[in-house]
Image (tube, rainbow, N blue to C red):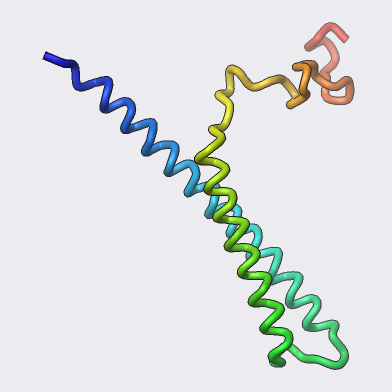
Length: 112
C-alpha cells in the first residue's frame, strides 16, 4: 500500500502556488488600474485643448489599461516562477547581508 498523503501535499502546494500567484496578479491589477484612472482623469481634466470625451483621451486611457493588464499577467508569471521566501528564512530588514540597518534598530533590542 502506498500512502496517499504525499501526492495530496504536492497537489495542495501546487494549488496554493497558483492561488498565491493569482492573488498577486489581482492586487497588481487593482493598483495599476487605480493609478491609471487617477492619472488619466487628472490629465484629462487639465487638458486645455482636449476634453474627457475626446477619442484621443480614451485611446490614451485604453493604452494605460492594457499596460495594467500586462503588468498583472507579468506579476502572475513571476510569482509562479519565484516563490516567496518563508518568514523564518527571510532576512531581517530585507538587507542583502542579513543585518538590520541602524535607522531601523530599536534601542535595547539589538544591544545598540
